[in-house]
Length: 224
Image 1 (cartoon, rainbow, N blue to C red):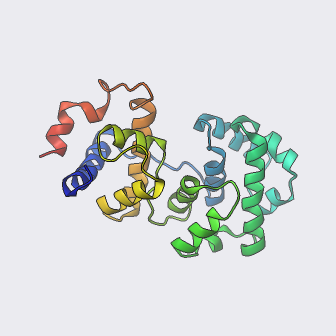
Image 2 (cartoon, rainbow, N blue to C red):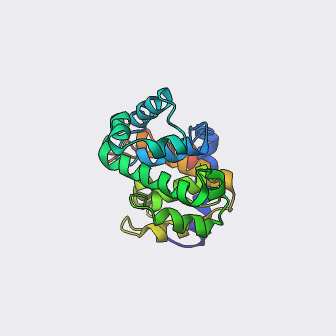
């Protein structure tokens, strides 16, 4: 289905979902560093667990690069325990902070001033940060134009026949880059809308009868 018509439909789906579900207010963070911490902690866990871990960090006033740099792995691991896999995630956070301190004197705005390719290469060089996490940081933290691909993206759009589910991360990302206007707001909101649909409707056992993408109004608004 990867043709001009399907690419046009991808944007129509965005327009329909933003009209139906409204802005998602994602990523919920007060500072860029808090956003990065959330992106690392949300790997393999629900956001509600991440919120608990971030509250713990806020209570201790640890959402600060210099402070995190001084904390031991064990101290940090116990503080972020609600996020699950806390020992591994502690190492990942420490790895990120080490780079931030060593190369940018702890100032995340200096890191985010890198060009998009430079920033992505740097993030992917940090142990524990993969493509989805790196791109989330780039999009929501650095506010640079890149489309984030997650499991929900693959599930929803492969079920609707846009591409095979086994497509690589890069293939799916390129498909969206070629299908959408390259605007920060669209990349931001579309990813958040996809998460909404994936969590609430397009589950492993899908609730197609409830999904906005399976309602008659969708076909009227989006296909004409």
